[in-house]
Length: 254
Length: 300
Image (cartoon, rainbow over all chains, first blue to last red; front, side):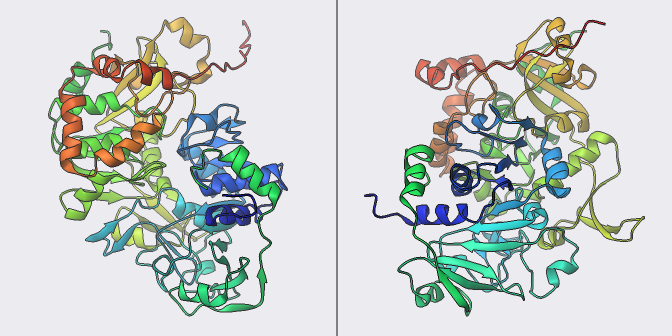
């Protein structure tokens, strides 16, 4: 692709990276979240700390990690601990600012299904399951979801609650006693959804050239548009250059 | 009596049909050679537990070794689905018991510590607990707040791979530590596979790196390259190409069976397997060196 343009993956990575603050401690997955963190570190958040559920803290991967347990994450990291320790000392204790989540379905209240399509005991499509996401969604201070915007991915209700967003809305999440703030933004290839006061995901930003109707048609509930809905700034030359030349030169994820 | 033995002998003597087996290793140090030996010996009706069943259990399920799976994430890491396991779950052939990673590892922590259960803070996601009665909620006896508990997991056998150990089984690991230590302490019997068997003086030169003591180990097997296509930090890289190819190979039961015929049943042991992979693969997976700075323990 020539440098004046960008593809949907690049758009999502760039917008996710912009949500991260300097000094954030981020629980990272491979793929798009990993690219977003590395891009943020090379632009506005040089002191961001990446930790991986495999038990790696302060990773400085020299190559693009292709699995959550890639050995490049360990070499040069500040610390390595056991799986029990990463989930208890770091995540449960409240030492993680940001978690990234994904799944087959995300509903109106930011609940995620990564477990099953159909009935749990008689699965129509069996998906991978929670892994770390049940606890990340509950205990990270902020969670971000990055996903392509398709109607089947955004049903009004998920088939299975793999991880909790705002549950049925209102104070339902707070009442369960979870410590984290829940999903703070869903970044898609069309725009950005964020929760309103009731925990319902509403459209708060459109990417350049995208219309509200387009987003509405690709969402499985009556999506609302925030009164002050913004248009995101297009990816900059600098952001795209770092992504394409430094972070994913073989175009595996972008 | 020396605990050093061949992997063939260790599997024959320590794993029995119907056992609950935990082959440990989170992406790193997955003991594929042991999985292959279990397949070769035709063990059946096993309950296979692993946080991430990975390709090792996809292959063992394809081979018909498993009655039940206990897990927390059934994916091909970085690639997609585990097709044989997924097909067996969707068709109802394979029983399963499911946790989140933390729930799974907390069960091992309870088993490894000799505790009746492990408490965890609530997560708000109720559907898994609703389908798995091992998740229970109790009141914190001090504050009265709700805590979630899981019971101990105490496998009959753990299989744990490590970089090196002495002949007593004092094992040292570096890189991703996963649930190696917990699996060893939680299990009734432990089969330890290692890249290198070293003199005890090497172990004693760096005691902080020992995560599994010989006292819990029943069998020590010297199996270089045991973890391929997973990896051993500092020894060989993860074979990402293999993980991607398996996605194609395993789409059908026949494809998986052909693989097993050629690479498991068609070979006597791991040495022959590594040899068959060939020099191009050996070269591709060989990492460069990056040594740690030595520490001074002091002479007292």
